[in-house]
Image (cartoon, rainbow, N blue to C red):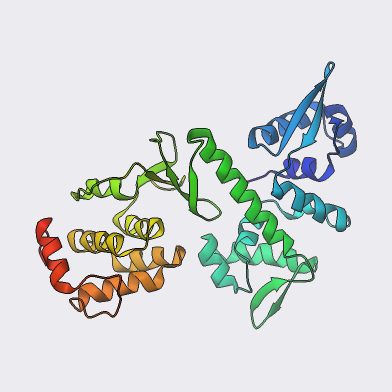
Length: 306
């Protein structure tokens, strides 16, 4: 997310600093600092003001910058730029409550060894501690989690606004987000999902004026399992649940994959109800699911065999 030099600039810059003044403070070349400042400007975390022939650097009013600079001022003895490199911010993002190494590894999609190395560095500096194998912050260092969250959200917003100024983020984690827009997005990393995506699996539904996209650098396209979860995130009403039931009846979806994705999106109970509904032919006590006879009729309308 941020390189060490970018974290150094954010930790050190005072309103009105020039590149030359920053280079002196940080003991880096002006060309190196200029590139780092340029990257931060592109991310929207700082901006520059022209003062004659010089450019002065000003921190943006992003909440992430405010939280980070507050930590740096309060704990000046801690080298945060060195500490927060690599996978550290990613692990901190998911430390919203006491968690084990395994839980953090699963949520951040990292190896346990990687998470262990990050936590050891934080523990050695007294920022986190353990209780019954669960890691949690000491004192007020939970603001590190706030910084990681605010930074990821801010960068997601900037990315979305660059292609859809009126877009809305419906769900997000450290690396991905689900967005609602009023316009089509044709940009790298954005994958269409929602009702429009059902057409790829031979299911045509009446579309609204909204479009939905998952931003992910890891995916080539949204899978049926992902689409089912996204549909429930968009709207968890009876109609959208019925659409998911049609998809699960029509396409061979790996149940383990579906449950794994449901855990990622905090939809375990909802997905479990859908699977049990299909397995028991409607023997599920849930007002948001149709009577089995109603679903059979709906499936027949879409030529889906039960």
